[in-house]
Length: 77
Image (cartoon, rainbow, N blue to C red; front, side, top):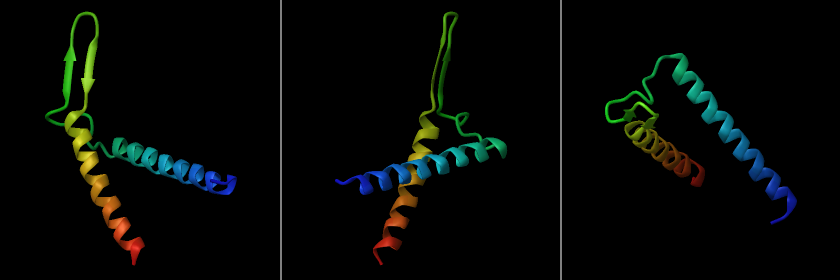
């Protein structure tokens, strides 16, 4: 792998992070309940708390899988 390819991959990763960050920002701005869905695990005790967004993670995973499959099909043509 030469330096040009490495630079392209780093720029693509940066654009992907920018897109994901923007999507999360807009989700919060419009009041989408990601992180507060039924099935998200939240345990609060006297000495700390534990939070695992299980349902939100599954939903985001399914949406990204569909999006990337569609993108892959369009790019192969």
